[in-house]
Length: 299
Image (cartoon, rainbow, N blue to C red; front, side):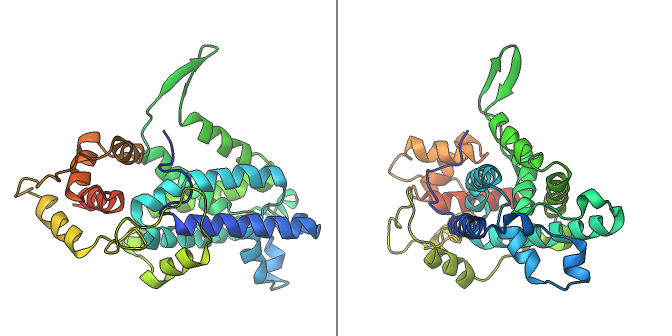
């Protein structure tokens, strides 16, 4: 199992978020202010430091936390490829806002002096992502080490556990709040999963982030730059193929889909045969094929 194609290809929001977190962590680390970025109840309600929540979300409090956190954010880019950059932007905003509200509420209710200041970092987004990771990403490999059973997902869980316990209570609480936020998103509270930000916002992320290793330009001029909205032709294919009753047989492409494209869709949790058919209908455009499969799951 992997996160799909290497690099930040088709994941501009993740790329921007990772770059921002790395820069903020390095800048505040050089200034020696990393330990002062954590969120506290007094900062919000007594000192009215409203900038604190924003900074506390973008900057990790230590280098080890940054390494594990950025690795997990990078891996979870697979979800942006699944739902598209517009909807993934909503997922990020929802996770950040809801987890912060839970954190402030927990600080007010617990009144624990050892939890006076929580650790900083995008814990809400990271641990919200563990909800779809647990429910939607299948296990592709199982193995044993010293008699213990592991899977290819075990390494992601271990990285998350390390991040969760990095600052003990100060990091456990933000992690739990992130899981709660991810669960609410999964339950589609207030129909949040139907929302998506306007196209120009995802386009901004695409222009804002400089090219990274593994990013490739669009294969054809007619292809959508954001990679998350099917073209008019693709929508027609979706309507004819993936309606509730599947009224018409598929029109296969003359070119057999590449094995690596099929493997990419399978790694996202789709059935191999469905992935192959979607690629054939999308003329081997992996972005359009992903949208076709996602639309099929909504019916």
